[in-house]
Amino acid sequence: MGAIRGDRTREPDVSGNAGSNRRRRERRRVADAAEDQPADLIVISPLSDFTCVGCGDEPGGGLVMEAAGPLCLGCTDLDHLTYLLAGDAALTRRARKASGLSAVVVRFSRSRKRYERQGVLVEEEALAQAEQHCLADEEVRARRRERDRLRRAEQDVEFQAQLAAAVVRLFPGCPPSRAEAIARHTGARGSGRVGRSAAGRSLDDAAVTRAVVASVRHQETGYDRLLMSGIGRSEAREQVRDEIERTLDRWRR
Image (cartoon, rainbow, N blue to C red; front, side, top):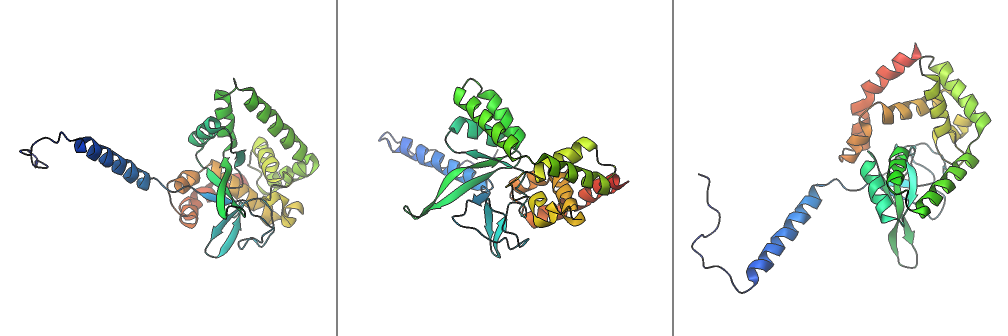
């Protein structure tokens, strides 16, 4: 028999304190469970331009602040995510639940002197899945139409075709459809991704390779799950490095 907790001979508390104590214990259990959860990844929407300490570019978009300074989304492996503006709690909740990797976007309010939540970054497929559950809402359908319109407007078809050709040239074993998907993702105007950097626009081999590596890291490895479990970016990258190299070696043939 296990040890008996507490004094079983004590008179029952009929004053109402027993219920209060139970509520306190329940709140404590909830708080302890929350502490066991990994903290949200935080992306800052900056008030002014910044220079990434990782790549030296001024990419625009969000940043992740680390000890060395601000890092762009490309250097923090978050640039493949889609931005979902705050405002629809159900859609946000479903999108984050379906997304293997997500981040909270905040912006500093000068008037309130604090950071305020603006939205979240989630995987595009997760957002589409969440919207499927909310299609009865006309506002969600309108948001999807607007997002599709903006996506079409930012596509640079000619450049993306050249970028896809560069991917196939460097990695002949990469499926053409995958090369096109990498080019569409990294070549979107204003994305701040590898494909829109100066080196990427010149189709520099190193920049194209970085775009392929980023795609493989997110889609062929468990990297996103490692980040969401609280493992640091450097350690997570090291854990999936060999897996990435195996895929790249296969595609180089």
